[in-house]
Length: 321
Image (cartoon, rainbow, N blue to C red; front, side, top):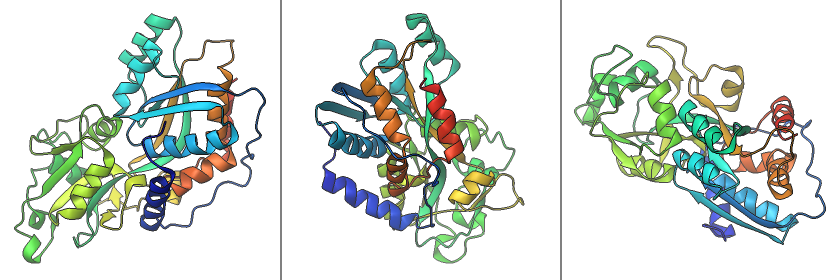
């Protein structure tokens, strides 16, 4: 059972591609997927909203190859993945951040071994403004000054667009903040990497999903928000970022993710319960092999995220053995 129809999924894909139009291609060295015999049964995924669309698209492609597989996808936030894997209510735990040590400890306490982390895609965590906002770029120091009330990066509080150098009617307008709720891995990643583990302002409009953040920014000329690049639309613009004020600015492109110049690049993961020395259930292993195949990484690209390199794919496949 899927949360989105194939038609809806394709429309979202087209929007994402249009918004993230950099020429990206899947590494030619990544192998095509080869179907395996005897793959059937139920497969459940609970976790990241950022990965929800991608998991749905993979599920649709996988089910075409294995009609006897029943797949359920639920994406309410990365923090829902560890409890589901611990309880066994899902075999796949997509997360837009790494598991916390406390989550790993809870898993190990229940199962006697640590969860296995599989990288499945690359992402530029983007800072979005309305398409009609003229601001050219931001440093993470300024992002912290905008979103945080504790200012761990040391900057002074910023509340209007004029304080960021924007002129005209927008200059005096208060900055309207959009973000995710605390169940989100994107929320946790942004808090750690952009805010230096500081606290968000109470005025941030917390949204239940990435799409809601982007939609809010698209409708509000004075808004700013953060989300994975895969949720970009024509109504918003991802700002080029620098790690420090006065530092080199980098756009949220695939090339800049790979070369490390974009300061908010991250890996997206699927966690699984794999007992050391024992294989994964066949349906789980093959789903992950499909995601890491040429076809699976082409789906990553169509969804607006960035594909893994062949070297990265090889490293992830080793973890399945």
